[in-house]
Amino acid sequence: MSLVSNVHSLTCPFGRLVGVACDFNVANYSVNDFEYYAVHRDSSLQSAVDQRCAEFLAGRYVAAQALKALSANTDRETHVGVGELRSPIWPNGVVGSISHSREFAVAFVGSTTTCLGAGVDVEAIMPETTCEEVHDELMNADEIGLATSVNIPYATWVTAVFAAKEAFFKAAFPSVKRYFGFDAVSVLSIHGDHWQQGVRITVRVNAELELPFHRHAEFDVSVCVLPNQHVMAVLVV
Image (cartoon, rainbow, N blue to C red; front, side, top):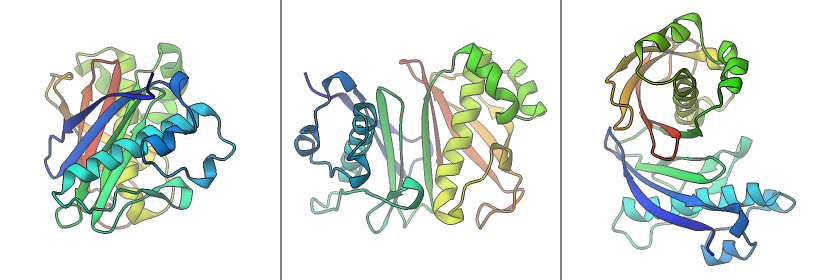
């Protein structure tokens, strides 16, 4: 049995990005999979558990497939390195983002000629008990109140807000180069109600971050509920 299965392309609602996703099963992981899937085994994985290795491998594999799909240039570099704070190092001329759950991985990439940054986050829908533990830290009162206006369960809404803020962080990090809290950005509005097809969530920056992520700047995040009970958020700047 192979580690990776169901490799498929994804469409970015905003255009400009190429996406690829896959399922993976850690029970089928072998250290030889790095060679089989032509993914460099980073030194940080030398003592890592199988779950971490499988997640890293699947994420880098879909990133490589997305890079290949981005351009007809068959000589394009597909290696994605590991930088400070474990952030991906993309080939010259490329912006991108990688995310994974325990069994699903996704990557989106784009050209620096059309994009300043990209962020993707995929999360398994949180159990209700987890939502109760994290919603006060994750959301402000207005965001909690917005739950009454959406046609999805509260746990899905909390997961969607989390994913949207994580996607923003990933898009901003290459410019900001530092961590910031969930309160640095807040959800202003939701456009659409077909969550399986994708809705648009508008977020506003509340903190003083580096351009173009300055205070009061607004960005649209595409959020959808996937058939595998995950929520995926995508942002392109």
